[in-house]
Image (tube, rainbow, N blue to C red; front, side, top):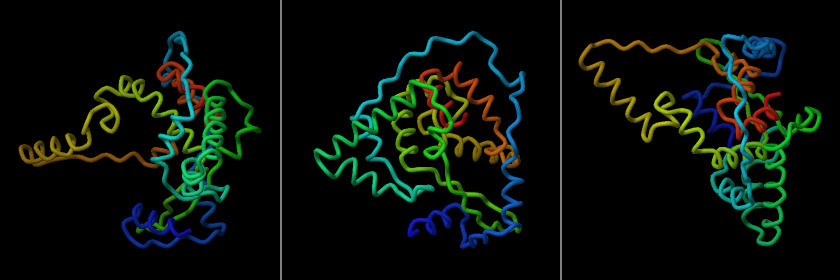
Length: 232
């Protein structure tokens, strides 16, 4: 709980209150989380599936990811400090725990698991914050263990992401891409005096998860089974 308030202030830029858990808040959150629809054919990659090379996820990879782990607790009530201490601060016991977490992460990356087996790990808690326009800003906090596993997978498949992103995703495909974008926009504005900023409404919650899962099998094959287990 000591980390929720700083995170809230960082996200909102003010001291917007956490909304009460009543019907009004629940209805507002429901509007921001529409029901999933079947993926549209035009948004899918229509190619034969590529071969899926197995990604090796080791205890050393878990150790590396643990050093970068931060954040508050998800629905299980276990925050990052617990896992960092357990994975790095207990010598032989930490080594055994890293091996166990590596085995679990490898299982997630190798096999499509039933939803009943993963739903607790994949779940999150939702914190509704008040926006300045009387709207609701939902902040989701997932299980720390799942975040650790995802960090491990991302580090192991980083080269795949960089190749896929190219110059289209400045936060991943280009070194110092965001800084370059700022300078480019500033130069354009200086010369032309006009910049249009477009912000898609509720973009993250409107992404078609089914389409993302199917396309990941084509575009990010080594991570596709892990993605399926998280978003099935």
